[in-house]
Amino acid sequence: MTIRASASNVIDDFVTYDPSRLLDELIEKLCLQSDSELARTIDVAPTVISKIRHRLIPVGPIMLIRMHEVSELTIGELRLLMGDRRQKMRHNGQALKPQNVE
Figure 1 (tube, rainbow, N blue to C red):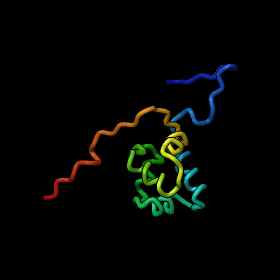
Figure 2: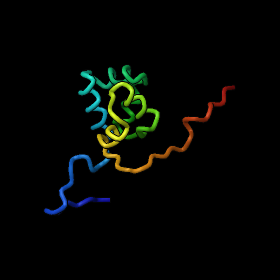
Figure 3: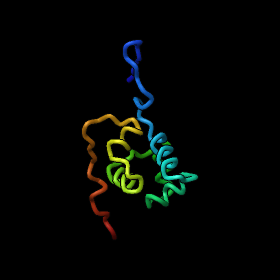
Figure 4: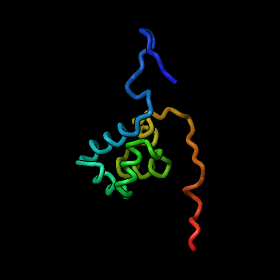
């Protein structure tokens, strides 16, 4: 889907979904130096941040809550930073299901 701006329809920088913008803003706000430091701060593996940055996995509700807790930005502000304009956020429930351990 392509969004076109006309003279009467000004579109700001946050129209397109870009989780890298969110990560960059968090790094700046928290005075961190790298994705690795951000990963340690929100208590996730560095590979998770890398996968989010490269759009291999989405920024899910649990990740947004962790980001909110360390940054004190609201969930709405975090979603706005990455260009997520949906009114409701849904997940598939996989994160809540226990893993089968054999």
